[in-house]
Length: 124
Image 1: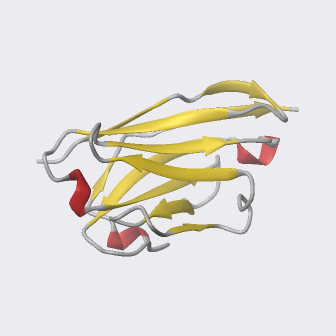
Image 2 (image 1 turned 90 degrees about the horizontal axis):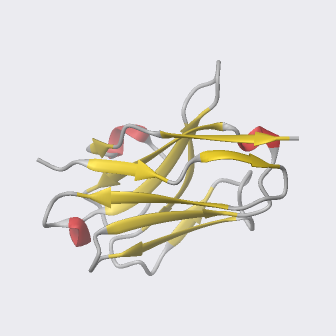
Image 3 (image 1 turned 30 degrees about the vertical axis):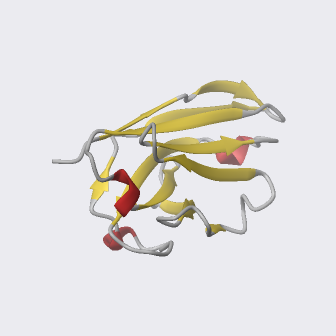
């Protein structure tokens, strides 16, 4: 059974940076693509960005492109979401998820395992 645990959320001001981490409990982390999603109050969960199995391909939502960076460390079995120049509209619960796929998907149903989420709040 795979478990994912996010950490690194918190309360920051607009323009600040945060790095979210996603710890994978299984032995097969390198077999998964990693995706990051977020859900703001009253809104549907949305794709933020993701990284392929090999780490050679990343893909981002237009709303975060140029500000957020997804990375992974297969030795540590960790995924990361570096968030720079944060805006109040980035306020949401952020989730990491993994998919047994080579590429990166924006579709939630492609992801087999999910973390519990971590809150990010950006004040203006």
